[in-house]
Picture (spheres, rainbow, N blue to C red):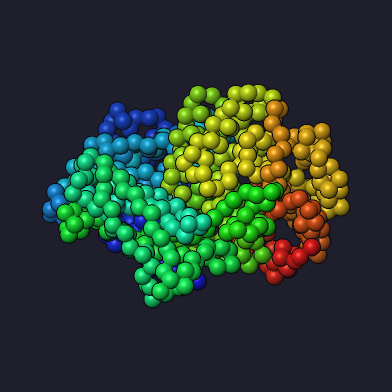
Length: 594
């Protein structure tokens, strides 16, 4: 296993890497604006006296921010002075990137607005070149948040205190902020699609340029292994800001037609260097990227990875930390989580109600950990909710499309934001529309609609059940498969597998939430009765996990969960990432053949 040739530590966007960037994390000026006076008083115009400081990208609710105020504040402001030394800005452009700001952001440079964005989980960027001066420049960000059920909020609470499985809200900048310098014409986005059947890779690039771009061409050089062995190269002309190429990976003179596939066991990755030329010789932009050659299909009740059924041993991962909440405290913390998950015998994660830092996906690509990518839920269904959800979901799908570790899209969970879907046509139509919209952009990956509860159209049927006893669980699903699939018997005690008018069509079935075992201690909760000691925990964990693996028609499971989250103490690790049970014991149970 290798790190990629273009890997740069802490670089926020590992699938489109440039050398010239400036990370703006660290100390920013900060102020609450509870009376919403900032716009009227022009807080964006210059540096204000009396502001506090905050450590970005940690939100004011966290201790790592330096503030730790868990009360809700509807409007917050950020300010930072940056120095621009390039005296010839006319030949270069400067892009300002925000990896995640919750929820509505408006950005100013030197007192002038450069753009705004809605949605807490997707990256957004602005070309700020025209607003910059040589020397000191002031970046100001106004962020507005609320308790509105219509916006995708995931596990963030919408009342004063935590409750159930909803936690302290996240307000403002919570992922990295950074700048980079590019040429007048530059590569803006990449969509990389492997085709295992033909042994080719399809590359679609968006180019920022004048509309016709008749003098631009894009070259892709593909290499593999530590020696940077050349595999293939292709050059195409850019037309209307687009470039498309399909490149064969077969090299009979070197590899005897071998195609190196990406899988959990062998996470092989190809590197790509892209060069954008003007008039065939002048280099306008150069970026590094990568891809994995893998294929996901659904066939006869199985999920097929690279032509063979794969049994998915997943674990629910909410991505919360004690001192930083939704923000990873460091890149090393992300790597540690991945290593811990794999040490416990899991081959994938269901990243729950969160779009994680893209460096997490990079390391999943490198290490071979499967990912179900899930959208943060809203909790209302109205015109605003439809617009907010659809827009942000498609931003996320586009942003993370090329990561080979992502093998499933999961836009909805447990009817959150789909109230009444069992009988009501409106949420049924909404769920279908998101399914089909996702499949249009990405026909490769399975899409799960309404994970765990009443499905409409869905490539995988997923069931949630926190039954404690293995024999009860096995009997329920072994003896009642047909009755569960027809809705005569409910799974999880109270939920039908399908909404009215929909039925089972032979899809794969996965128990995508179960377990949730907590130790008998005060101050938190788990699912079912708490266990008294480690031996009791291991017996119950083994009992229920083995029961699921015995079910002949189930092709995977997802245990709840990686770590404790605030009041929810049912993790296999605590909030500080200490194992509660020896991971070797859990690994043996998870990997044991039944």
